[in-house]
Image 1 (cartoon, rainbow, N blue to C red):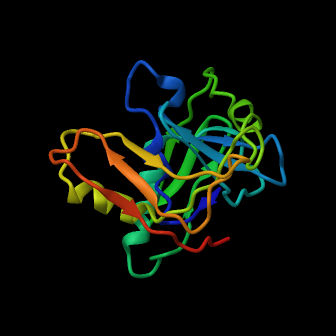
Image 2 (cartoon, rainbow, N blue to C red):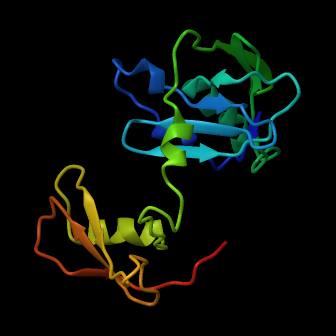
Length: 193
């Protein structure tokens, strides 16, 4: 399996020791034409499309194996090349500094049913609305108002009679746990496909 060297999907796994079933990303090969590497910590769900190679087996991918396999990308010869891990049934094998390494894969656990989550969410149906913004700008405005701990953020936007977002309007951002009273607007941007 190969994923972009810049992908940090393991950052979206749980570090809670009581939630072992979501402590590592999970390779889903249920649709061979659309493989996905999923990660969740119970608050977010992220799926990226990896390049799958012959012999790669579906299942958990040790979080640390992704971090270690990425280390080779820091050398000047491999910078920017995909992070590569061979996923055998019981182990993840990868190169680190010219040597081969291996880590056991988790078996016997059940990853959450992401297809159940996704099937209930269809853009344009059931009140779903698409809003586009630059996440770096969102992070910048959270830092700008000062934060206490890990604040939650609410987004407010106008909708038309059908419940669709009104294009061209700014999005109001409310940072909960801010240290100051604030007014924040994310200005409209073009969508990129």
